[in-house]
Length: 405
Image 1 (tube, rainbow, N blue to C red):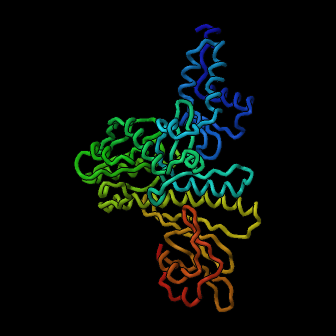
Image 2: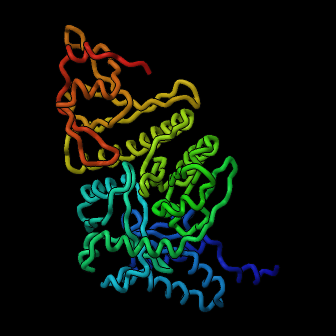
Image 3: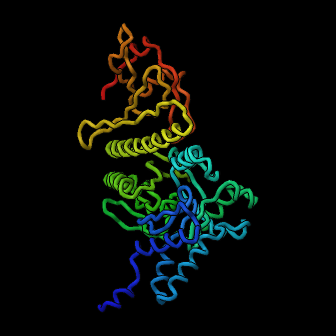
């Protein structure tokens, strides 16, 4: 290859993303734009508020003559910066898609709105799906994806259910049978179109793909769909292990639950096999602790900005031996206004007859709630926390059965 051929070569994907980001900055389009390398896209706004998928733009950029490449970027940016969602439901209907998102996303946005009051409020339109996930709506075009909010539904004059029905029709039209066999009866969805996890909303697909038994599914991240049979414990164990790996490697988590079909509806369920149940609980405990730590950092930032004097308790993990059961632990101290996470074990402060701190007593969560439930105010957040301003009676603490880690 000659020197001039080298300089004529199209840029790498990462280099192209930086070209686009620089142009966004020069055009003053979105100061908070960021490049997400794994998804090869640029996102602006809060957590998928506005998404520019770069694949088509990169393909056209590479195919264009050098003198035309800047025009290709400007063309796609004109689409990206234009109002992403039509003003009428009729115009938007064909591009609506359902998306599954972590319930943590809503909690993150609420805290963000309180810490950054200058940020425009965005009321997301969503529907409860499971303990840790919600169904949302996206307006998806060739160049970008926009999350649908309550204000947009009101402008369209439709309910969430009406818009979701249209989105589900579109998802079905885009869903062919596309799976990769990973061994042990485990299947991986192979659509790779940003809606792999959304296919969990299609019970008939689950049954068509499952070979014997009842279908069991996990959607650990936004682009992953894992399916195993209720008759294949080895496949279920492999599924939980892969879900754990994907959650750690890919981020953008959706749900740690195991899902099945009951009476034609998708529901979270418990594994029948004891080994699978143990592995699933371990995975869920580790992920929930990570979410609590993210939440703690955000809440502490909020407390700093508002001046509120409240302790945001940590969620700690204890593991006696690698690969064994993981136990989550939090601390409840006297005379401290605390936001307490729900953990397997609560360490309650113990004092001697002189009123001096002499250690801690470990209680299982249910025991701690039994003696102090009246002091615990549940907060509307995910993962759930409890506001405690007082401490249980010392005699009740002493009488409660201690637990072993």
